[in-house]
Image (cartoon, rainbow, N blue to C red; front, side, top):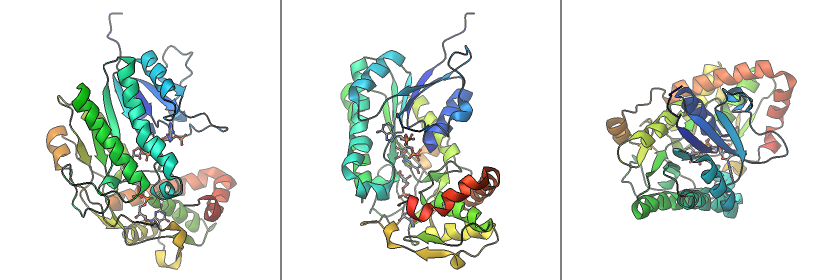
Length: 348
Ligand code: NDP
Ligand code: GDR
């Protein structure tokens, strides 16, 4: 054969939105991809099922392993076993509102989980490049525009845990010379976005209202400003950060801010609906402390990585509505039921 060994990557959070797009990207680039999954009583791999090839097949390049960021010993054995060239730490309790309900658990996974993984890399004694999924939530109350030099002021247990992970990633780079970097990503969405984040909550509701199976949508603060990009483009930026000559931290964003109200207008408008006829207020969706405005300056990533986002928020809203309208058509009654149950099932 004489061929060279494919690069190996380990993705924590592979079953999440970003993990699934990143796995797709790396497989397309010829990588052998390993993913950490949590044992659950039901299958939780829906976002990566289309990528799965039976591991008995000699062509298989995607392998899933049970593990959890709360289990440091497991991370060491797994890393020593796989010996990946690149590790992408995407796993986290990633919902800001939920982090107020489960602050300690969020600190344990979103914060401590990162140092367990960094320490596992060190203890396994392997040479690997490490990506940490840092967040614009770290900027919190610091007004926009935000870039790599903007001071952090987190406004939630989630944001505070991400700040911790950011600093330990930098510390392992400085203390041990590890190629360890932070991607500071602003909100990014897609048809695979979790159903309780605001964009997907809206686009699913639009599909259900259009189909006549839902009439109202309960929401919180409509004045919040976010910089919403398209997840499929952001995972390319993550990969580029690990291919650079020097380990550095980068912001990925679109550079434009919109309110939740704007997103409602784009999404409902695309389906020929008026959002004001359907949206109602429920204080349960408010946060004890809110992040008012996040708008990222991604010029460093553009200059040094050649990364530029092409999908802006209005187009993103339209593509997500189209995908949810289509999904609802193909799902039969099952999905319709779950939409109707949202008001109690989706607690946030
Ligand atoms: P998701 O919530 O969609 O995915 C989170 C992933 O983490 C899931 O695979 C989940 O597994 C896994 N996970 C959660 N807890 C643990 C644990 N204790 N051990 C192992 N795995 C765990 O998030 P996204 O894909 O949207 O985001 C990816 C990362 O990027 C997260 O760290 C998030 O905080 C961060 N981020 C996201 C942004 C965004 O706009 N999407 C912006 C900036 C940062 P399971 O499927 O079993 O629940
Ligand atoms: P965010 O995303 O907190 O920015 O964190 P989310 O979509 O949950 O909220 C965005 C804004 O919308 C407001 N909002 C509502 N939010 C939700 N979820 N549900 C509602 O009904 C609702 N009504 C108004 C919120 O108050 C907020 O201002 C996301 C996550 O992906 C994090 O993991 C990531 O780090 C950051 O983006 C960048």
